[in-house]
Structures are given as C-alpha cells and as structure tokens.
Image 1: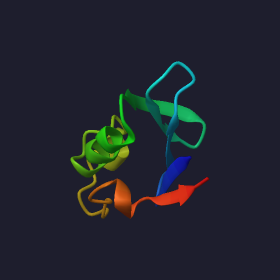
Image 2: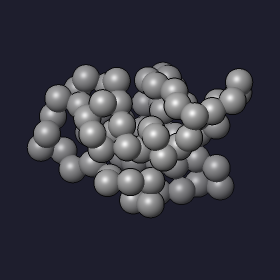
Image 3: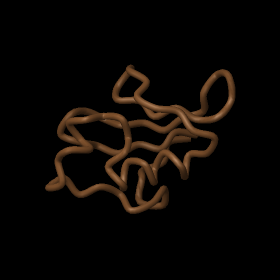
Length: 73
C-alpha cells in the first residue's frame, strides 16, 4: 500500500522500504525513512520531512495525519 500527497514540488509517497520500515519519497527520490508510515506523515505535518522547500513553506497546507493522505493499493 502507498500513501500519497500532492505538493507544488511533486507527489510525496509513503511506501514500504525494501529493507523494512517505510520510505518518504518525492517522485523517485527517497527523502526520509521511519519505522511506521504514521511517523513519516507526522514529520511532514510538523515541517520536519527533510524536504526543505516543503518544510520551510508554511503557506502550504499539509495533511494532519496519515488519514488525510490518499491511498493506493
């Protein structure tokens, strides 16, 4: 399962990492990693995703939690 969120910079994806845990990707680039997808969603909301353009832009509304991300099976 993939979770995704459209940003002005491209599509952010949260998906399972091949070595365990979950990756946060912008298009094809891995931005961050965490043990759970909820942790990554929280990092995006708290402007701590690792993607500076997104984190530093407080005018962009970010999903509050994983429930607000779109899901692809």
